[in-house]
View 1: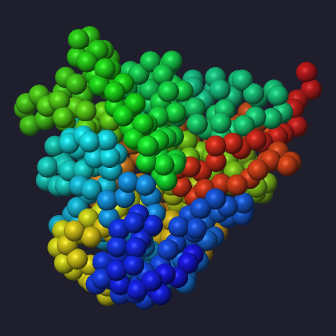
View 2 (view 1 turned 45 degrees about the horizontal axis):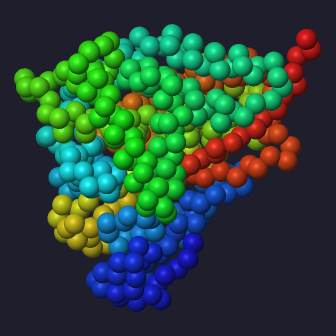
View 3 (view 1 turned 120 degrees about the vertical axis):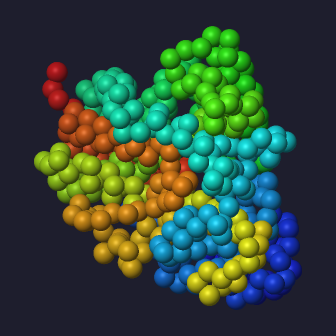
Length: 422
């Protein structure tokens, strides 16, 4: 966590763009290493240092390939992050999805890049397919996918619970929901990984986005010719405000869902099982008390947020005493907001008795995660079935336990347990 205050006005960010001269030098900090790879038991501890040591709102230079701004304001407190998420009069989400602009496309990802009230019509279209009732209807499918994967390693005494389980089950569920052919599984993960996991390689990011979009366009054409009983077909043949969706609207929705369905639950799963493997007492408590699994998932979500979303300021204003100008970006650091002691008692402890767990992992306000009900159900089933079918497990001795507090999370998480005698 480097103090960049000595850079001075006009200094360059990592993107090569000069930091605006009006940014106070004393508020410029590079915090990228706080969200970098870590072998600590608590990989979010460096983010806690950001909360404790840096101002509640500061300016961070851009570090990622293809950055369109020299940097962004970063807010770390729960109330400030919630305010940015909820106040759509002051903050816009139109600039939060960079992949399409990066490859020269002009359509928007929908609904996330539409602000209310325009945003609402797309949520009205999509909400029925991600409601608790709709998720309950695919419960058997989730159970079947999870059970089949566990069948493949339950009697072996070890598995890679990230690569061979966590990265697979939510994507298979999502692919069936959308109607995508399962033989595209590895392609999807390859393209998605290039887009989301190597933010320093612009050409790889473009390759992933272009490859995914090219396939989705061909799939949409196929669905247009041959409607099916899947979500893609309902989008292609759907309507908003009594009219058919335009081609740009269809692609904006399908592309957004495709990106969102690849990583978030998989990343959370790997961090959830990592914590369990490192904490035998918590693991046993959850084995003995299945009725606590829903509360446990909420605490896993709170303590392992994987997305720190941004918004664009619509007008000049102040946030926590800091002057922010129209057009500047504001990043919501959920990795610190979810640990704010003003909102969460004893925030760095895993607590199963929280009477209110209003974490911001699924964002807040009108852009609250569309798939939150599905994600919760997938995580609960995965947690319950792994604990029911595997004995006490731990990280395999000698295995690399490095993890990233974000979408990269853990590509590999080998665990071992005492296998039953044949």
